[in-house]
Amino acid sequence: MKTRFVYFVICLILVNCKEPQPQLTFKYSDKPIVLNCDINHSELFNEAIHHFEANLIEFSTTNKPNLNNAYRIFLKESSRYQVNYNNISNQHSLDIFEALKNVEDLWIKKNNKLSLNYNHEIFSCIGENITDEGIKTTFNALLKTNSMSMRMLKDVLSAKSYRLTKDKYLATFVALELYYSKLSDVDLSLKQETPADTKLKEENDPHTGHSHN
Image (cartoon, rainbow, N blue to C red):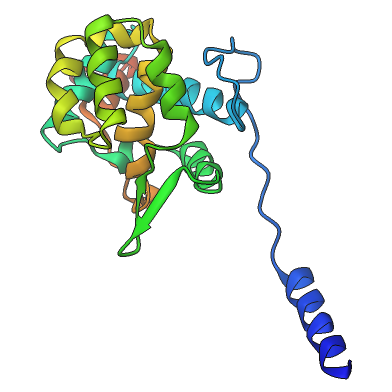
């Protein structure tokens, strides 16, 4: 009896000493619900896709936001392994990633690395709602046979990147697969100025183009 009591006290101490997980601040709660999935954490997935697209536009364009062009650039760079995730992400990206990491059964951990678990219900919901019939057939076939791979989808996604601006289910797959799952090693202190940043600064600098000799 005494041993059980001591064990109970130790458990209480460990529970009480565990640091609470910070609550994610939802910045896009005023935006439309684009994923009508009857699943847990649907609000988080909606936050994730809205933020991902906002980042794409900020990273890929200057004073003329164009989501279609942003997707095209992102998929092209992703297929060539040229995406600079330190640049394209920010603190809210990492906060969303931390929240996603706590979604039960969304991830598989192997050799201390996280990869998506395609058996999670979010992927079934995505597969049921993709609007392009060709992509939908391929996506669901890969899910059914447990052979989901970006290698099998990257060409068709690049060719039909324009679909992502309307199809938020397919866009969510891209966000999870090609963005959030890549943020484990992001270091925001390594951000660099992009050509778009430099161009915008030059356009807004009243001294640009003027000689002061």
